[in-house]
Amino acid sequence: MSRWARLSVHALGLLPLLLMIVAATNNQLGPDPGEYLMHFTGEWAARLLILTLCISPLRQLTSSANVLRLRRPLGLYTFFYACIHLLFFLHFYLGWLPSDLWEELVERPFITVGFSAWLVMLTLAITSNTSMQRRLRQNWRRLHRGIYGVAILVSLHILWQARSDIGEALLYSLLFAGLLLWRFARYRKKQAAGSNSQ
Image 1 (cartoon, helix red, strand yellow):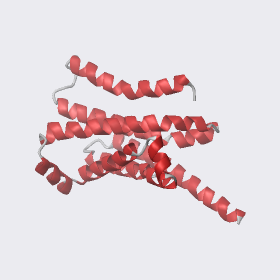
Image 2 (spheres, rainbow, N blue to C red):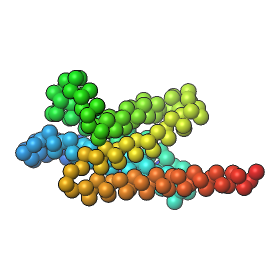
Image 3 (cartoon, helix red, strand yellow):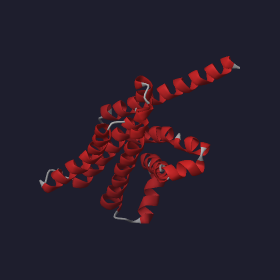
Image 4 (cartoon, helix red, strand yellow):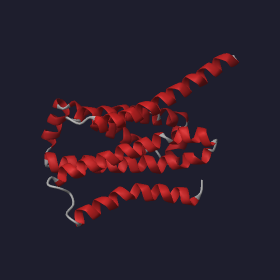
């Protein structure tokens, strides 16, 4: 993988942070800065998750294993913006009160699935380095298939929190569904090939 490809991924990953800083500096966060920042960071976390899931199809299309090197930085940037999204929620909406967080988790399903997605991403981020890959061996691959569960949880999070205008939420969910269906079809194809070879 070329140096320019890696630099492009880092540039893309840092772009939302730069846009937030510029918007805050120029007082362009709108009448409800908390709502704006929550939506902005959540949206970028979802976009970067979609790009992360696109790496496997891209590898098949290009027949190059080098593109897999882009998956880890994209995944970590996804987790980074998911963390900021959660921090803004805790700060602007809960005021850092643990009791209120528990109440939200129990009473609002879209927050329950969103927080569950973050917990899975936390596990994937912690184990994403080469050292953990060596230590976990084959279990590492099984663990990191959890990204597909994250995609489902994020889709539910987006759909359930949408109000009157669900067009954008449906678009994200369709993109996630398409990528998961591609992965499922590839898995079934491998299974069929394995059965035929026996």
